Amino acid sequence: VRIMSIRKIGEKLREGIELTEEEKLEFDNFREAHNIIIKLFTIELKKVNFSKQHLTASRNKRIETIISKLCRPEKPKLDRIHDIAGTRIIFENIKSLEDYIDILENTELVNFKEKINEDKNRYNYIKNPKSDGYRSIHKVFYYSSNIPYSTLNEKSFNLENKKIELQLRTRLQHIWATTVEIYDIINKSNIKTGTHNKLETKEGLFFKKCSLVFEGIESNDVEKIKININEIFRDKDLVEIYNRLKGIKNIKNIQLPKTLGSDEVFILITDLNKGKTTFFTTDPIEKNDKQDTFLINASYRRLEEKNTKGEYILLLLTLGDIKKLKNVYPNYFLNTNEFISILKKYKDKYIKEED
Picture 1 (tube, rainbow, N blue to C red):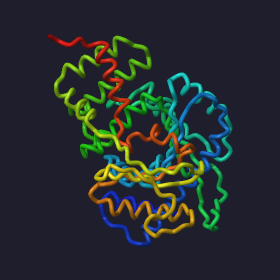
Picture 2 (picture 1 turned 90 degrees about the vertical axis):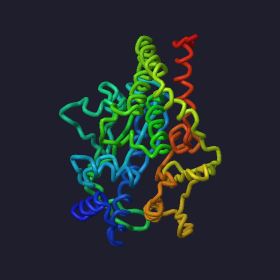
Picture 3 (picture 1 turned 90 degrees about the horizontal axis):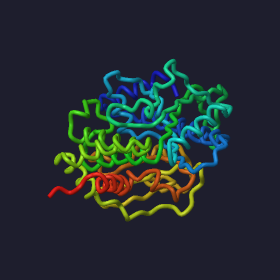
Picture 4 (picture 1 turned 180 degrees about the horizontal axis):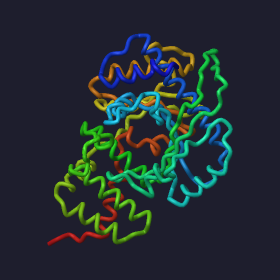
């Protein structure tokens, strides 16, 4: 994909200008290249010999998230966004996560090299959490081979220097992050992606305090848990946000495949009006029976174009074990149950009912 034309497409997306048919095709190609990067990176990650329990999923970034990144004050170029392709691994605890990183850093990946920053802790948001409470470790890899990649339908892609972001987080960090997304979906807010000072809002403060509770649980810091649980449940505005999350009905009307190839790309669609989540592995608009990731990219873009009122949440993803989908993406089922039960457990433990 030509860099200058992709940059122009990024500029048009930022300004809200409709793409030409040729640009739409080029954008589909751009996404297709990142689907291939996901596929190749997933194959290489299998070399990491790690036996402890973990969940892995990969996704191609949603259009609204791409646009929100393009609109940041620094106005990044579309071709320079390093997490269009993303893989996430979720671990039971910090120790497992650290063990995995040790093994990963001593495993030779053939076609991918890690992008090393001068500040090694720049993307370590566990050691240095973001001010809003986000915790995770991000690593960026780039495709180092200059040999063109040819697909089964004989399309050729130059993947050299295409990037993928690997996110490593614990189960508690994941529950926190996905609940922030659910809150944004239901309230049409932008706590996750907003560039404003989130901590000046009650919602931002609530999620920051919750993050500190979860951090206290993981580090066995009882004092940190007690202080923040008290600050949440002694503030009526924060309690109201807790109750709002508690009142969200999670989606039970789910049509998902019983089996799915580990490298098969599919579109997950959550219909917020009907309270229903379903999927497509082929083009749902053209009813094409042939599995073709280029077609599914075109379909994904068209569905995004139709989603002007935000009635659907759309995600293009690859998942090794479809049975784990609800654990990896509770936000696509509006499921806040674990988040609420953790807060309730520590509320009951550390806050005595006042007379």
